[in-house]
Image (tube, rainbow, N blue to C red; front, side, top):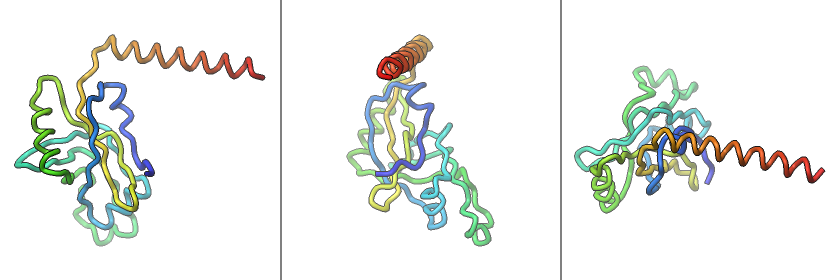
Length: 151
């Protein structure tokens, strides 16, 4: 599994409760663009309506060789995600809980197929974010000290 794009804000702003891997409906030019890593998940989210799971706000840049055929291409258009009915019903229940939302974590290339890893998340408080920064800074300092001691 090769990671093509990551939502870096996800782990900083949210507590990840559950993750799912979903297929995504793309056109041929979009698939090539995603495989070249021209996708951005920043600010994107998942919406569920009429039994369909929809990825909103994800940016997939137009594929340059196909730009002549894609005259009215919208890079931020909504894209349908493919999940089983059981998973969709579970996500509907989880999204209705207070304080939870569903966001994309990363885009993967799994055996030639483009997949999106989505997660049910709960927002972090400001003090949780500060704790994460402190923990990361501590780990960085610890790593730096162990590397200088070995030499």
